[in-house]
Length: 378
Ligand code: AMP
Image (cartoon, rainbow, N blue to C red):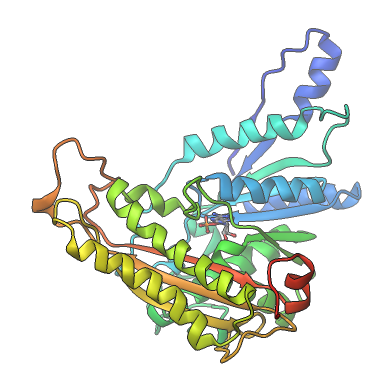
């Protein structure tokens, strides 16, 4: 068993008050399931609600915004940091995935200070981080080591056919890994609410289905996608993009926004909405082809799809009653290494590896979009 407790320094002079405040600023770092259960039980007994935010670590504002939301809606927040091998195929970047433990904990300590700071109205916000759960692989997979081989033995959760669509096309066991680890985390923490980001829209739909089908007593809350100022959705993988590749990657967002705009002007045909996003991305690739190789970057579009918000099945027309998901994935190709300039701003790994990026927009129900002035059937 391993348990550390971080204490944020308090500048308050009155000793009794300082002690009271510093105690409430602690969050535990737990690696043992029984410790998590003990803490969770204490919250249950004191009637405190618990929100869970599962992450792979390498925390950024996308993760922190989910934690903030969880702290607005629950008294206690559990954050899990676990890089789950089961969701990485043999060909994928498990080893290379950024691991930033010290920075992650520092970010959570800052966030905790924010969460506990009195707001302008003088009131302390509702909840705070109770614990970071960072288990070992032996803890989460006690019987057999996790294997993403489709034929591997083990106890798995699969959510089909949703796991075969979209990302599942090129990552066949990815969602088996996600669903299995999330089920374990839900069983361990038994949260009142779990928080996922809309950025990984297929994951959020799959988790909703999993919770429903396995009768898990938690509410699934989806937080909005957080973006950098240039519009790129925040992702732990963005560090691999140098300035040149990042610029072309932005056409993913531009394409989806153009299709969203077309939908808001009344277009519902999947063919035309998908075509609109594709043409923005094709244009960008065309522009890159005409550039000198020392300035160009290229990408491949994996898919652009219009999907049902609950089943993820393809839609031929946007569903104007329930809304639809327009999602896309691109693979940004490595830079040609003979063609990088001295002093060029390169990403981690010198832009030598392929980077897969996903993004999406939700096309809202027509009545809603009309109300918000974003679409007009006119
Ligand atoms: P990950 O560590 O990549 O598995 O992400 C953990 C959680 O953060 C998932 O629910 C993601 O959907 C969510 N997330 C990742 N990036 C973003 C983002 N840019 N905005 C909002 N949520 C995000």
